[in-house]
Image (tube, rainbow, N blue to C red; front, top):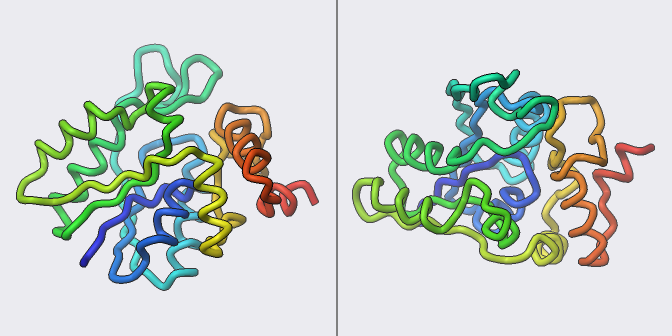
Length: 196
């Protein structure tokens, strides 16, 4: 089965890649996010690790009025609502596949982020043909446990909203990552190397 996976370079998509890397093409989107360089480098490292083709796509996202960049509200970075629906539709139009895989976790649904069930159903309806959209519906800690079990190189991932050389440790993404590794009882090698 041919799979196309949205590879942000983050933890969720890295574990998804570890699960389905055979006959998979990864797609990474640069859309003006603050950590664009770090996310792209993580996606490149993950795809190289698994020996999968990585398609890199740059698309402009329109910032909201008064924001500095599409992922900021004032000085606070945040998700771009609906971005994965756009990425899925764009990917399906360019790369036919048997299934489209997106890394996400249950916390995304509870937090009302960009991958709400309604948006995914809408995306499925908008896509032509019979593609399957597979989304991981596990907790973030479960994804860490699974990644650890599969030997996923989680230390190659990037989970910080900011584009600094090292993760800030304080944004919502960093806090969520730290909590997931702590709950899973797994040492976060990416944070160990970043602090050293």
